Length: 335
Image (cartoon, rainbow, N blue to C red; front, side, top):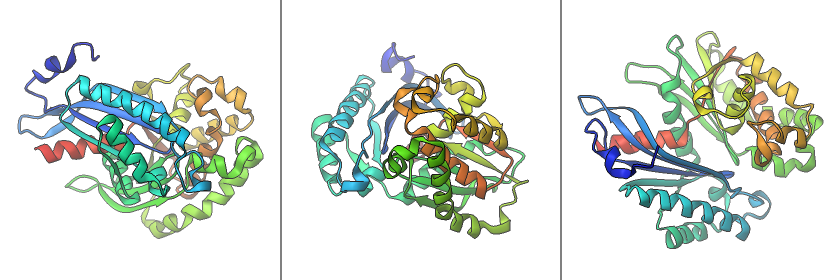
């Protein structure tokens, strides 16, 4: 996909300039390099992915307990960011945005991360607010609101926080009616509950403890969120992995998972099956793997808590989110 370099992809006049967006989360470091696909009037109709990179770095490891990003986590993260900087340089991308989310928001030494990233990679890392994170997730997922629905509840289960956003259709495009960021994610849950986070009993306790964290937002939406007119729209490693298992994929396949529709009840049955497996057995499932196995039940607990409060029968899965939101914003700024 990227062997021909930047010159060949920029020669097509139906494309805008190359863009690079980087999302440094509590658990993952993800990069997308893409070309905006332009309509005749110059508006952006989509993106052609030129290159991508993803690596689990666990930047937020221990930050809930210590309030600090550890040296080991910083070293892992810098190693991944150097790969990203190399990809960006290879394509000579001029329009770059790099963000960090919950782990960096929590850490007292986030300035050390930002300065090391600048000094060692040349990237300017921006620590964004929880509100902006929710906005970017909504922007990235908005194109997947189903045609026959009035809107959707977008939820993004991260490593250190979970965003919920109520999108409603309008003539101007999907509008945000409510957005919230709950400071709990798969890494923070796994650390808080310890060994219990990988057991069936621990799942039940996590789910029960999480419901009150999300309940005020469900209550604020009250009866206006009619589950016959709205669907769930989930993004994150947890939701995309559950979708891959529901689709019986031997290994993860983004093209099969992204934009796929599922019955919520079927996805919850997938969760129920996973609860009987230990971490070793979870690691052997192709779409989970060893790096994600110990975080799977915490993610499932967040997913199940959300499904119990917003009881829409249908769920759409997005293998997109913050990076796609950044691409859309960057593209708009350039037009």
